Length: 563
Image 1 (spheres, rainbow, N blue to C red):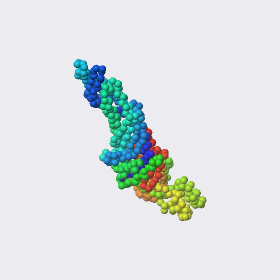
Image 2: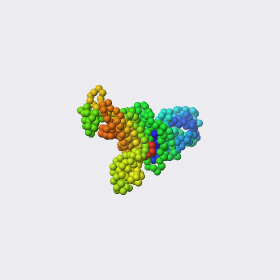
Image 3: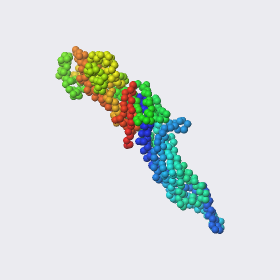
Image 4: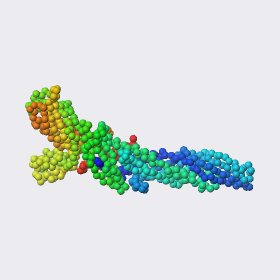
């Protein structure tokens, strides 16, 4: 299953790197210190030749300990991020971050110890004088440059059920090392200076082996582990943002495509809807595309939200007189002339109880909506007399071509104009179908309250798609509703002689429509959560949303704000 699919282009990858990784890694590099380093130097002999004498100095057990290291004038700069394949035998796809540092120094505390033996050939008491010597100095080694490569792998750990960033093996390469052996060090006594090059080599090797991987992975692990939490709407409603059927793909090493399961649960109970849905992946964004990502969101995600609201009872409501703009609409006395069976209850008020019989379901289809822009278009496309005939259609939504054409025919529009009108008004739409029981209860304070039961078949069109902050401060796909149709039918009543059919056409619109629309509004403002890492948010204002067949397409950029 995958009810959400995502394509991230090079622009998005560069944004993530520039806005988050670059700063985090530069901070990391700037705080790193060279490692302590013990350096063993081979034994050597130094001979001092005098006029008639020479003295031999033998140095052994030479150990140099470099400690408390610090970088001097070390200012790494970010270069670029590229996608590539690691030559690790598994062809692991990675994002390779490149940094470099110009001339810099490494400052150490230098502690040396050695055994010194002096042999003076012409002085008998000068033979075999042995002493243990220790010295301490400050030491600086200068480098011309350092190049740093940090490979990052993005994956999903199916065993741990979590998204992961891993850093297989970072590398650093130093160039142009120049050693400044402290004045007074025993190494200046070496007659073969090349033997001390191992000091330079060892220091350079220690810097080249600096572990950027562990710290980098710690930085990345913290942020990627926030993805599951972006699906938690609170009140027991949680979306599953684990990896979907397609997994993670890296098409032509130029972007990412991701399948995400989606689907919701309420207090641990999984949404039982269409778990076989598998959305296609969005086409990879080109390098020239300025958008960061493209998301497809299946209607299953919206249906799952409706199911969670249904399970939580959030789609049910009670309506009393004080809830209506016109409280008297629930006075029984308003209806006694229409239905004489109500006369014994004329002194009382009613309460409306609205309950969903089943969770609402969604359906993508073509509808014909006569909004302002469509009417303006038809004003220029139709003869004036024909346009006048369709004025009654303004604001209407038709979910059936047959019903629309019947309305056109009733308005006197000739069939030759049907195609023009239908083409202008047609659009892809997502409809929400609801099956509702509405019970009117007369509040006469009797053990068994008089009641009237209706069944309402309702269809609403989702419109006003946008991104925003919904429940539990989650970033969500939000929407509004435009009512397409309501059909109320009388079911039963315990009032003797009651004829409910006469109420069918007006009961819902008079007593429940305005309040129920507020309930739907709360559903749409909660919205369907979208997977995203903490600190990042979608650019709500500039996102492009469109309804396609079986999914909503979101073309968007993201913004980042460090905590």
